[in-house]
Image (tube, rainbow, N blue to C red; front, side, top):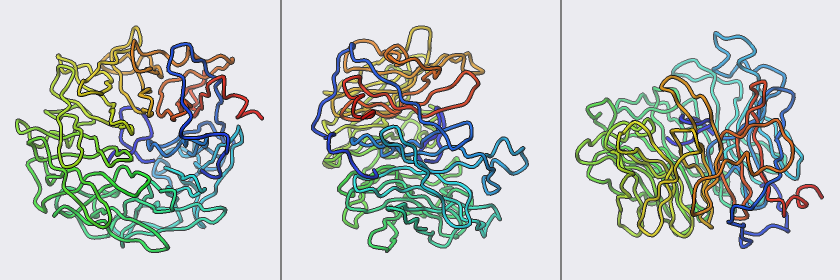
Amino acid sequence: MRLRAASHTRKLLVLGGLALFSMGLRAQKDESTRYVLYEIGTFGGPNSDYNGSAGVITNTGIVVGAANTTGTNPYDLACWGNSSSTCLAMHPFRWRRGTLIDLGVLPGGYGGWVNAANARGVTVGQSDDGEFDPLTGLPVFVATVWDHGEIRNLGTFGGGFSIAISVTDEGFVMGAAENGIVDTSGFAGFDGISQIRGFGWSGGEKFDLGTLGGTGTFPNAMNNSGRITGTSSTSTVPGPFGAAPQAPFLWRKGEMVNLGNLGGQVGVGNAINSRGDVVGASSLASEPFACQFYYNLSGHCHAFFWSQGHMTDLGTLGGTQSAAEEINNSGDAAGFSALPDDIYFHAFGWRQSKMIDLGVIAGDNYSRAFGMNDQGQVVGQSWLWDGHKTLASHAFLWNGSGPMIDLNTLVTNHTDLNLVEGSFITDRGWILAKGQLPNGDMRAAVLVPESDANLVEQ
């Protein structure tokens, strides 16, 4: 699984359009670009945030995510055994032109998240609904669609949990749902017990995407034509670390295609472009099950690029591990790789068959790329880690050449928000970032090039 809500972790994660924006408009790429920062507020609580799907910011300037309310959420697992201060309810939001709108939750629910939105105003994610998982007794969340005031529960395949991950402009929804069957292959769902399967939903009907021969599938990304990539188990028998072999897949028109691996037994597709090219990570023959832990950079796991039936090993920056996490429509990729010491890792950009070390912000020792646009600009996070805790963190921008730039230095308006991660960048150059206030509260923020500020403020 790939969706993330914070750096170094894996976690789960428009309406209307502005005619003034267009995919065809180009962002400036020089270092002189300056930004106006718009902080996304809350519904009375301390934090606003978003999940790690590229669909949370659109080329029309819409942002979707979730923000704290002042009420608690008894169905949030963070509440169980903890104080009420740890579990303030999060409500899905839509931000547009500086206006924050609460999208609401399912009947019986207290909180929810959204993961993506399309150009026609359909937004997808998950909400709790007051029900409980039949296998664990835990409160559940279920895949949800928000469509012009209507909130629809997409349900599951018989299990407790499900999420909606992405949606095309035509309204085709992709996600994952548990089926309530106890998993014995080491590819369990959100509750750690049930099998999990990818799903497609269209016209009120939900269907199973299938598997590559195993018991489970988890989709990570979808392009606007409805092609999907992710990972699926290829066997019902667990491997040496307790999990079944798995491979990246491409799903299109009802068919799931195994993209293969780089000699190993584990792989995952992380991102897909409009042409159907896929990037991700795969284990090597020297350590065939390494990629089950690649988010911690454990084992021989390499970034790959797949196109028209051929998988290319992108290599590393000298270490043994790498992973590609984003791809643009030109076939450029971005991700992170270990350095020769296999201790530190840096963000990379990949283009014209070459991996480029993006470096770190001065004083830091780690970096990771998260977002990339069609102009080849990359955003991500650079931080200083002392072996026990993070001492400093910076959101960065890389303009396709030269050193990465601390996004904090490019903001022209006064703000108390310290930008700690750059997550996504649109083709127009708008950046979605995470920031921290002096009191420790976290905020989502939109960085808009000064030339576009009038489009937000008019």
